[in-house]
Image (cartoon, rainbow, N blue to C red):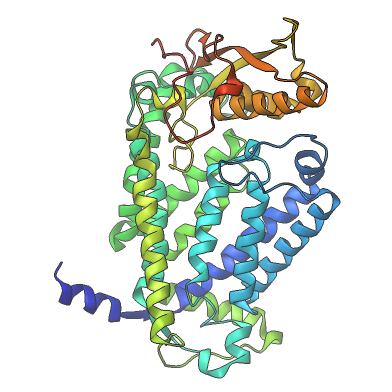
Length: 451
């Protein structure tokens, strides 16, 4: 593509309706998520009750706020209403991004791919004029009310969704998934009590069929959604796939978020019809209809900044999942470069970590009861992920320094089983973990994976 073609593309406009519908659906989905989180008691259970929280590298300063954590969730919930209505949209989406991302950074234990997706997507939406159509902002500010927006504003969301699917599909192209049907061979038989399908999940051929179908689905669905002739059948596949995964696995709102997100691939005419019906149902809001006009950024600098930030974000999403190539060893064993790479439900790890504290001055040594400091959920996550193990060792070092041991040494005896294999030693038990400096460098203290 030459420079002229690129310039022509960025001057192209399209209907503002798809982005408006996407904004409304996104706001509703996020409001539902926050309400669901609160009503299930997860704020108390995950962010109030634990006495220790695992941090992301570089974000150690982000911690739960005690009882004010509830206020954080309230602000996050209120921002979703602003997003849905398109009221003070920029402030609302910015507040949502900051509050939601802060919540996710409070404890690494709760990491899920779709939480990361929501943070990335909400950051992207900060830079898009999603309030230019069918919004209270467009009612309040007549000059904002336009029928068309730049094409790249809609395509940016399509590209992000396409990256999530396609990279999830690429990640499935490994021997465990394709030739051992792992970890579905572990997970599906446990679903024996699902009506009609329970007996089917006991069959080995079903595990292989689901594995291969999942990989083909992820690799092809973005292209099927893009092509007009296959879009309708692709959307049926999206609904079928995500409803089924929602029934089978505890992945919360992710299926519904992806179903709602896929609607942006449909034609502007369909979104206009949706908004027309929505306008009738919300006539009390008296949102005027935009008849003409194209969105204009407030200045050339704002336009270039928005386009620049969106471009960098999308390029980063294309590159970050491949950072695992910088590390030796098995990715699923070391987990170096695993997070933030759209690897969805690809492994089943189980293990335990038995920590030993040694006082070098006296030679006294003793083992730790992890349940003194961690919840069962935190302990389960910690036992199989090396950065958790190292962080917990540092916590123990600080704790026992305060208990009077001048320079405690922390060792761990750990075993991990990956995707149905036999359990094997995970961390070198002879390494004093307090001598390891946390960094992004290769972790030489993880023992080699014997397949």
